[in-house]
Image 1 (cartoon, rainbow over the protein chains, first blue to last red):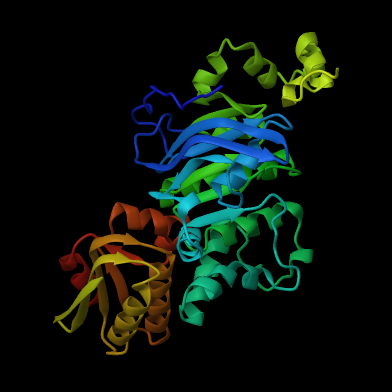
Image 2 (image 1 turned 45 degrees about the horizontal axis):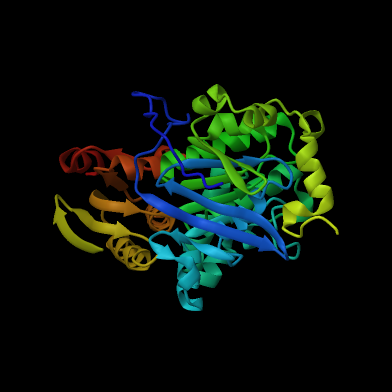
Length: 294
Length: 110
């Protein structure tokens, strides 16, 4: 199945800052065309088509094994697609050389699920690392930038601590600070709420909204947390078994009559909605194109 | 990025024009520090700024701190909405004095 982002809903006039703005009208900063990805012989993504716009918060959702993490890795240019193309900030990443990829990555920030801070460096050194690697800025400028970002993520004064001295929520926020240190055009966030209590999770959602509003960032968030997705998303893309099941606003998603979407929204397990024929095909290997055993 | 430095009523007015980003902020920092080192009040006119990133804001902060250490005046003028949002994100609008017009700035820092 091929699905393309469809969205006609207008951002509500006079919508307050820090709220989803609905379907964006900005330029397309990410274009995915007929993306197919495999893991070994198994097809993970099946002809995905999607556009993500400037200043938009796009949330990618899906159950376990839906392909959302693989999709994110492709958007971040960490994986090469089997076929299809991904255009980021006007460039086809499949045809980029090492130098072009290096330049592109300066414009992209990534907040990894586990934080991915270096344990041997202080929080401040972790945050400044991209500046050391990519710029020739004066040391004082870098330190001020790092402290500014720590202010933004409410970690002011923590720059000299080691990551092991931080709580899970603080590590996530420090990872955000590092991800935005270069003022990226696009920020990718992998499961920002995972493992956090509701209060800390909600604060991170607020932070994502503030960054979008203040810096005009395009933000792509992979999450399985419905509450968080509904709070921050301008649009949601729902993946299911490698296909795009839906792309649209939260309002449109909630109104969807698609049973599979409703099942995912209502957290119904696959066991509750088992299709016996499909299950049999899976057991006999037909789904993988191997055909039934003779 | 381009810049222009003038002097009026013993106040240095530095106008930055264009984008202040990772590429141009080292130059902006140098210009701002030179203006502060003149030991006169400094107004930084940001009306010609299209985009200013964190490195540009960091240069403004360093110049402000240097001026304050010398009990000098350092203020911003005509901050665009976009630049103001960047300042507000880190609550920097609380530490900079911001004037709507050069005339207001001159009256404020003189």
